[in-house]
Image (cartoon, rainbow, N blue to C red):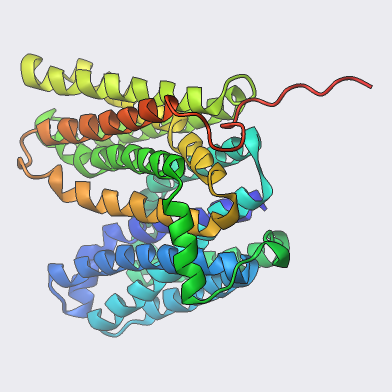
Length: 401
């Protein structure tokens, strides 16, 4: 079940990054401008956010399994339409539907884990999901670059169609219904608005969800700006940039793996606070280094590695803590997390490029601000008594028979 859910969560980077190497060829093939083919990325991200916001709350009334199956079926059909698109207009529309249906899988994968797992087990599972999320953005563009020559950009969308079918089969075989009828709420607009009101009234949920989104915003600041900072500012070659990106991604994966072990020994909130504090310190040192020391590669690259790696101790734990606060509406809670996450990512992406391609200051400032705000939120929450649950403390050992 976890493998099926992880694949559902990986659709965003796969469907975003795999076809990026083929954008110039797509523009020529479809007789479109660069702006036209770039809109295929914009509409996908818009659909991704809409799918999470609408379907997450619906699942609290209708259940998870049927909606996931429907979403993966639509994902497969829309991916096939992308592969067959005769014009860029058709491709843009199909990408909107592809993003919407992909958002269904992402939001409900989180909700299924929140239904089935509590306490430190949930933190472990969310960390494993983050491992997949850390690997997919690295593998996807490399895979797309390899496939572009032999099968073309249309072939890449056929590969995404095949992956969507695998998701549907995996869901059908391994993902049961995790929300029993007695725990469901009505599926109408009144029930949806009531669920949103319930979720947004939980201050601790909002705090942890915002901290998670800010941590993701810091990582997306790095993802958006690092190609320009490492190559145009630090003078690395494209091959060296790929190596740096891969090393940082390995650090992220290792930190997530370590987190699955540490949650058995330490409170999840403590691990989250440590991870976010370390991220902020590294980000602040990164910004100060750029401002007062200069662009010294031997200083900047290690600080970037620490910053990215500590995401592994932050995002999964923040997600688990947030979902723990809203057990009565896990789908709606997952939708709010996803909307905050991708909304903030969309906001910081253009901001880190405001200074042009010859400076890394906007990237360093964006990472420092995001991590600083997240840390302030966490320290504020630490002063308040927990409203419910265990705040995901490690489980006590059971007595021997």
